[in-house]
Image (tube, one colour):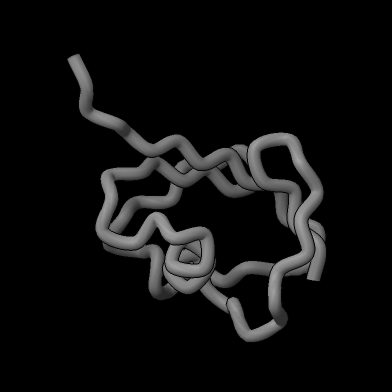
Length: 67
């Protein structure tokens, strides 16, 4: 399926059916990240319940420590 992630079209495997599995696919699992789907922020505790559909638009921001 094709998703827009941070402004870039990306082909994502069809088996990534939830926001949680998408975050894992993007290798962001376990990191502090904010996920917005189609203009709505998805709470982390809902990631494994929220479906992903072809054509969805995501903005994903994760935090990086540094000094």
